[in-house]
Length: 65
Image (cartoon, rainbow, N blue to C red; front, side, top):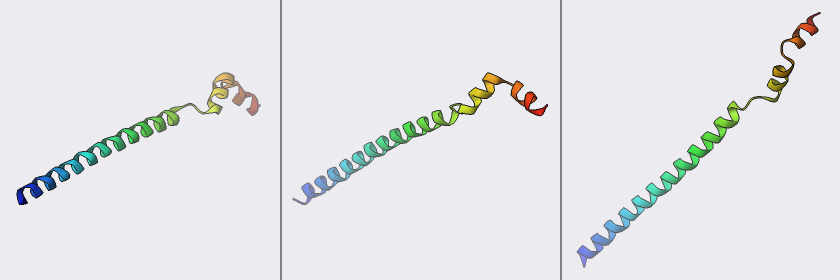
């Protein structure tokens, strides 16, 4: 009986390890997705940049006259 109890404890411990690894992998995937979205949003051009590109340098020269 004692051997069976040890085997059962070993199996339960191994199942806990596997479950925690699966959970850790899922967390890593979610974090990777979050960081990817954050980086995409970070490099997105600002709204003012479109106006600067459209009007160019002319706005600055007209304001200084």
